[in-house]
Image (cartoon, rainbow, N blue to C red; front, side):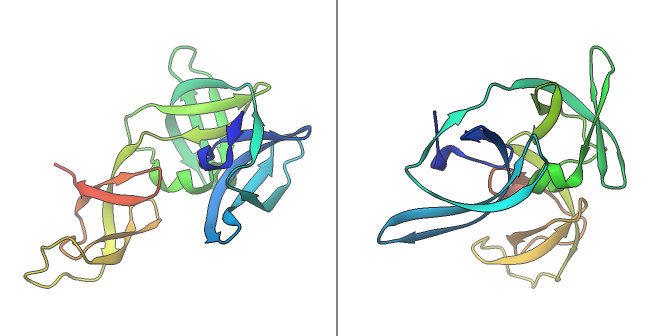
Length: 188
């Protein structure tokens, strides 16, 4: 069984007879009745995407999945092509199916990525917890802004926008936590 609080981008669970994969965590709302989390999910079989709101205590049936370690071979438009390292078999996954994880992976990376398969089809990707990216645009920092407690938006080499401390500049390599997209430290 899987509980709502355990669902992350790429998680697969069953509601009735439908297998759903989480593409994006939209928001959480806490109130008197408890926490409600809003997700964008995709039906694995039909391919339909929908937004759902789930209570924090809801339980779902887990889905049997096959997980393989692969490397991103190349990106062709909105299609990401992954290659299995032993058999050299290639699998295509659309950017839409990758959800938020598309912003954390690049063809220049050399680390393995977990690809989740359901009935022989790739349905999700789990990048490493920590990845290194390069800042391609951010507002300039001001001398003395080294506290690290104040953040500004920055665009990374994969096109996503994250919050970074004020001391970060264009060209700085940073480490990100892929579970929530937060800045961890400057890369060494």
